[in-house]
Length: 357
Ligand code: SF4
Image 1 (cartoon, protein in one colour):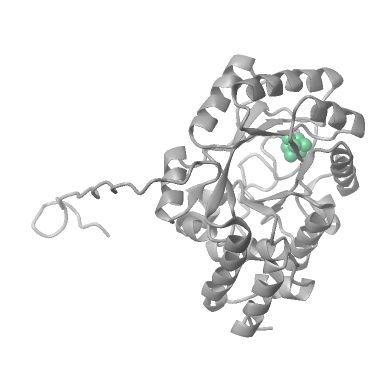
Image 2 (cartoon, rainbow, N blue to C red):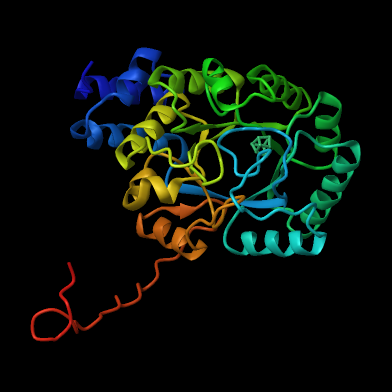
């Protein structure tokens, strides 16, 4: 199937009605050519703007407890036996967490994501996190809080909801048929059970995927349709960061163009859902990050759990330069743009310094 204008218009009509494209369309998008990319991005952008206008939601990650996880997720730098050399610490102090949260909110984030490594929280951990949530809500009532603590049953999910958490993140990550290639210490069904528990508890479900882990196009489509069926309110799309010291070290399957096709496919399967460009955005999309903002309506500000993102001020500049606005901010006044910085050439012809090439 070619992505001709008639097909793209059909995608836009479906998306504007909140309906998904079908599986064959989704696979065709992943297999489309680079020549088709401008039309595809334009179609996804029309759907994105239909539901979310020119707004970009900023989310801020805080890693409450890092590394030393007993699970063996192959993509994860915090996994059992990881030699990735990432920061490892048990529960960070409330003061350090408060400082990190305040800086994310000052940077424009309107959702704070509190994440802890591990299989799942004990009752004591739930109480600890509820205390953190109360403190953040008291100081910043306008901010949403999403918690991500691993596997939970309905009782723990309900306790977190009563404690004030708005949302819970638990990614499906990859297709059921690919799950054993990625992790052996738990199953896809375990992840589905947690998603069901948190929905029953009234937490807003946030669940996404990681692309670039050796999955087929069909498997990528499978997980996106599973996420749609799960009723996830937000869908983070992560691109594998192949940390040294993990089983997926050195894996390189994605190009910026393929990342854009993946994001467009997710947008057109989940048209009215918050689609977020997650970890790996900078490394994989590279110069195409602003183009991705025409498809997604949400990103993480600043750093990720165990890897550094680009500087938060560059995220904000990228959004402003794209003519978009940060969600939750008042309409932005027209400002006189700063004069561009000019650097006088002191290299190449006419100098003794090598030319810039
Ligand atoms: S359960 Fe979470 S923290 Fe632990 S290895 Fe898997 S992804 Fe990493």
